[in-house]
Amino acid sequence: MRYALVVLTLLLLAPVGTSFAEVAEDDIEPFENEVIMPTYSRAVQLAFARVSDIDSYDSAELSEAYSWLVVTWIPKEKHIATIGSPDESEEAPILRGAYIWTYRNPRGALESLGASLDAGEIESFSPLLEKVYSPRFTPNDPEFDEQWHLNNSGQTSGGVVGEDANVTGVWEKYNGYGVVISVVDDGLQWNHSDIQPHYSSAHSYDWCDDDGDPSPSGFNGHGTSVAGVAGAVGNNSIYVAGAAFGATIAGSTLIACGLDDSMESDALGYHNDDIDIYTNSWGPWDDGVTLEGPGPLTVATIEDSAYNGRSGLGNIYTWAAGNGLTANDNSNYDGYANNRFAIAVTAITHMGQQSWYA
Figure 1 (cartoon, rainbow, N blue to C red):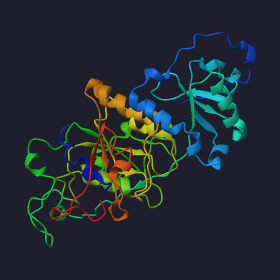
Figure 2 (figure 1 turned 180 degrees about the vertical axis):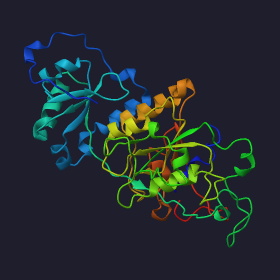
Figure 3 (figure 1 turned 180 degrees about the horizontal axis):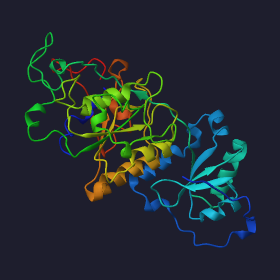
Figure 4 (figure 1 turned 120 degrees about the vertical axis):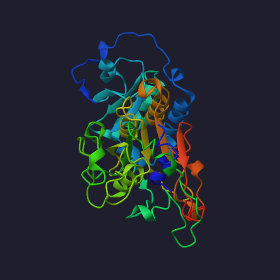
């Protein structure tokens, strides 16, 4: 179940490309061939090993890959003079020695990158391909009395008293005030009357449209529902109350478009000194066969933020475990929910039993 109940147990605690067309090949000077990959954590190295397995990709995908993640010690200004010879190069997020190489005509990129690897100019290369993720189910509870997940008094047919998140008892002292929650999803209707009073535009971003307004487009209402369950303003006589109704809510529009490892990394590390919790109610398709996880940039961002975010206190990442029960899926197939720095949470019903989909 990929919805904002993933935060209920935690909420109250709490690139500019450069063109190098003018650099000649003989401008490359000898350099000390420092090996970069061993300086990365084991988890990041494993992520690189997975994404750099070229045989695991469809040949049509590779022939149309404009951007590639490359690890090399060669200075950025000399990348054009390598055998790989990208049209543009920019530093990748978070990882020293990692770059994003872009080709205007991608047809020959794979061959030239392979030759560059064989020549020892680069240590790794992998395509940055767009992925599409699946949002997870969210409840639609219009009144607090019906919000059994916060206070189960047996108000639903067959409901078991006490099978809830057990948070209401601390609301007199702790309601999430001072905690910033980033809802990483398909958008946030920030001007909703139950969101707007606690909305932070300074911590919000739309990674699909590359602007500061995370408002959803079309029928994308998943992120707003997630935000409501997490932090809808409470005690204001309208609609519902969130689990942490005093918290500040930010929106990070990410899964409303195709995205790659670099975009995920940017979103999950955005303002990580100010944001306390990144709640994620999305992931790979839960079809029982898909085995997928974050790329090396995203792995590195989550890892670094867990240790160093919030000025050393560390950021909290929550992830919904999935919707794949009917497909005999396993949350261990999902490398996001299964990340050692993420807290994965599944769903139960109002009777205290595993939900049919989770």
